[in-house]
Length: 126
Ligand SMILES: [Zn+2]
Ligand SMILES: [Zn+2]
Image (cartoon, rainbow, N blue to C red; front, side, top):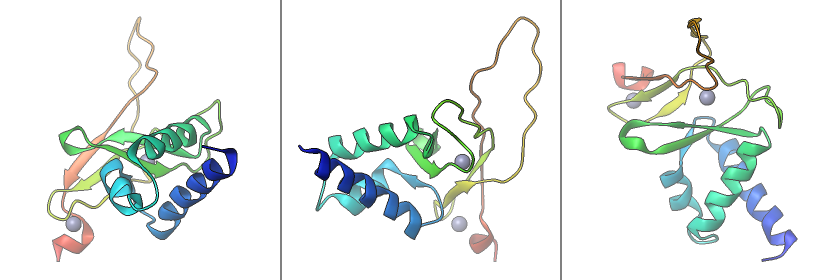
């Protein structure tokens, strides 16, 4: 696989995130892109985009991995400490623009945190 092809797969995956402003699970992405790319390529591109501070990942219901676009992250500093919301009725999952305080715990250093809130989204509440 050459460099051009790699770049195309990166563009293609990013365009899926442009189309859908919400988070996408690896299952969604594989399903949308299965005509063009195999799973391995998709996982590799996602890993790389996460390393580059373009996407961040989190664990959803049933351990499924989700990805969403980062706002202010860089290669060295992922600053996505926000909760994610997953709708239990339609499955829509997105980033919440609120901050959750990380407690100061004596003798512990917190490196990562993950908050998954589950419930019903605005569409499913009506
Ligand atoms: Zn919903
Ligand atoms: Zn997020």
